[in-house]
Structure formats: structure tokens, C-alpha cells
Length: 99
Image (cartoon, rainbow, N blue to C red; front, side, top):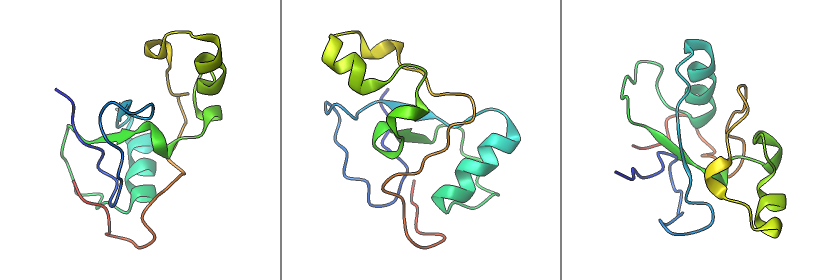
């Protein structure tokens, strides 16, 4: 099941090139970094939060998405680097992210 992006105000639609949805990291420290960056509460224990690809730079991936797109390689092979944190198109105020 495709889940919507949990970043407040994200207008990404399913079927766009940025429609990859990334689960939050399982490592508690990395997960806390994502939660803080997105302005969510640390007490938020929802398991199925997703962040779409719009919020990551090409350098956040083990394979550069721009190179893959130009080469016609499968997007399914894209993986976030272990310490990647969402940095693009984020809410500007704490507590602004929805879910």
C-alpha cells in the first residue's frame, strides 16, 4: 500500500518521478534525526510514516537518481545512504508536519 508523504505541505502525487516513499530508519538515533528535521514530536510512535523522494538530494542515494534517469536504469535500485536525512522542501516551523 502506498502511504502519503508525512511532510506538511508536500504536494507530491503518486506516479511522479519523486514518488518513492522512504520508511523512517529503524535505528533510534537516525529516526530521531528525521523526526526532529521534520518537526514531528519525538513521542510520535507511528510505524508507517513515509517521506517521499522530493525531500532528499541526489547525493543522499547510493546511486545518483539523475544518472539513473539519464541511463534508463531501474529506479527500484535506489537506496538511501545509511545516514541520509531529509533536507529539501521541509516545514518551516516546529510541529508543522502532519501525518
